[in-house]
Length: 309
Image: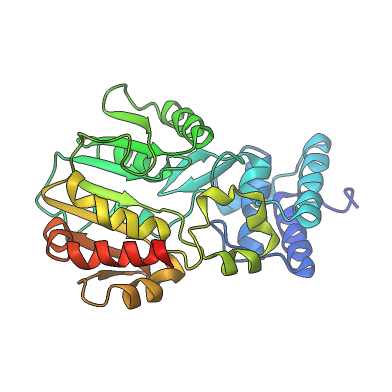
């Protein structure tokens, strides 16, 4: 077979066909078999994702052909995400190291980061930001790279995830002091800290939903996905505690994905602002510190009821 496949385009086409025939799920940064095959083939031969089309006719060496074919078959047989197979993922235009220590980098928050969280942060330049539940560090590191005047903290409960985040900090050549990684169970390790901006992509998958997820998600640490019976455990705790760590005019951005409707039903009076992305709403809300304080009793009551249920 390898003799029939010669160029980058050949292998991308073959990979896309294999992935489609195998019925793979594409939810880790790519949304089609063709896009995922492109990611795998280019990364496997150490080429960037924005390679000019003219290079599609470039021929692979015998060693490269063997390596790419092995990765394609491994993707089909094990359902392992491509980012883990090739050791990298792209987020907000930046390359990150990716492995089983943390979720594969992916989030609609990338769009907000590149746009400077406009219009909410328009007119504000220097600020302190926190990436809560940082995982691989992609959100906080992207904030620091795209906004060099910001001071950014990355926090996570997982030491494994933080080790990967620190590797990505070094990989992006971020200077010591402006960006730091902190071990913390939500805010427990950040007692005295206050931020102008808190951004979080916490676990928000319900136990039932997790059991029904495609095999690809089983390769990721469940700690970064599952958040109780209805997916709200972490979010309610975060909402209950966040005001103590926000500056007076601070903002909170949280991704809750498919748990959006459960959250609104749980807290119907909280004025969540749901962000509209280029692809439409994607389960990301914004709240001001004043909103959290005004509705603190409702949030605390919902959290206590949730804990007792």
